[in-house]
Structure formats: structure tokens, C-alpha cells
Image (tube, rainbow, N blue to C red):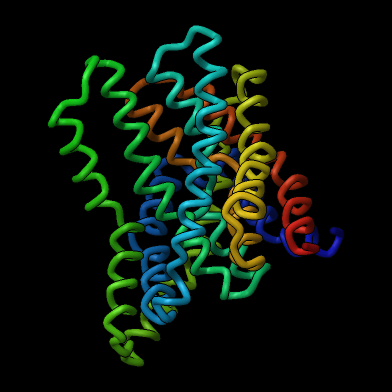
Length: 309
């Protein structure tokens, strides 16, 4: 446990450095936005494409893991939605809370951290988890928000979802890499070097950007944020563990990686969606802040647990 905590500490230290830079205004909000855009569109995309293209397709795709992770995530998504419904919230607000409870920072934090802690063999399972979050749940929240407002699912909403998926660089890079791998095309040495150099900026850049963005997050509605953080850091990995260990059992290694990915703190893009639609941005902001701080302790516990089994 102590060893894993010490191995995760550098990641959170870089996040802390970014937080200091943002809090002290050494790094402005505009600078954070541009750094995030660089990581999202260039560095992280290069890393994802390289990993997907150079790993054998059979080693990446695992249908049972996809189904198991999806079911486990739907369980916590449903729980958060039910609690929101019992509190009398409308559908769009409940959707934002459910997104906080179920969607973790897999791309910016999970991919580099879990690849280091579990070895590069963890990249395949992490990419599948990321694909489920992006394709299924990023689409679901748009459907629920627009459907809740309009009272029905319109063609405009479906078009919005389709365009959003096609423009998402993570989905494009993973899909392109998987196609490259499935066709068994070699990656030329100059291209591989280019992707390696550019992708190398993803880990420090993403972690620093997370910290700098946290500096602008508020801690309002702490009770709700604490509940959503508990769902994300504790309930989500427990649900995924129950499904992948007992209901749809898979091999221990990909199961451990998926459970660890489920224990990651709330993803920053949840706040972006909440702010874009003007729905509960403060509680999403607080959930991101609280869950990231708490994950310094909870995440090593979960990783130690899955590593011991």
C-alpha cells in the first residue's frame, strides 16, 4: 500500500504544481485552456494512436470487459439518477449528477498513471474503458439533457451526438489506431518517433492542466459533491468489481485495470458539459475538486487491493 501510494504521489504532485500555478495566477485561465487544448488534440491523441496502432488488435479488444464495465457503470449511473429523482431533481440535472458519479478522468489521469503502475499491458483495457465512457455516456448525457428540455428525442440531438463523436480526437485516434492494428500495417520508424516525442508531452501536460483547471473550481454544495465523489471513488469500482469478478468474470489483469480505472476521480469534461448547458456547473465543479483530492488516498487503496488479488 505504501509503495503504491509513493508511486502515485508524483502524479498528484504534478497536479498540485499545476494547481499552485493556476491559484497564484502564474498560469492564467487562458493559458490553462490552451494547454488543455494542446494535450487533448495533439499530445494525448498521438499517444493513443501510437499505442492502438502498435499493439495487436486481439490484445486490445475484449468484449467481455466492455460489457462488464458498461454494466457496472450503468449500475452506479442508475443509483445516482435514482437518488437525484428522489430529491425531486429534473432529468437534465439528474443526468449531470449521474455523469459525475460514473465518469472518471481516464484520458488525462488514468492512461498515464495506470500504464506506469500496471505496465504498458494496461493500455488496451484503459482504452476500452475510455471508449465506453466517450461513446456511450458522453452520448447519453446529451440525450438526457436535450430530451429532458424538449420532452422528446429530436433529429437535431442525434446529429449533435454524431458530430460530437466524429470530432472527438480521442475517439478518432483510438479508432484510427485500432484500424491500423487490425490491418496489420507497420508503423514507419519516423512516424513512430514523431508519435513517441509528441505523445511524451501528454502525461506531464495533462496532469499540469488538471491541477491548473482545479484552481478555478469552487467547493459549493459540498454535501452533494461529497455524495457524488463517494459514488465515483467507492461505489463505481465496487460495482465494476462485482460484475467483472463474479457476474461476467474475465482474466485477473484486465479486470484489475478496469476496476482501478473505475476508481479515478470525476472527469473534467463533466464540468465543461454542465457549464455549456448551464445545468448544475457548481456541483460538477465541486465534485471534480473533492474527488480529485480524496483520490490521493482512495485510489492507491483500490490499486493495492486489485494488485493483491
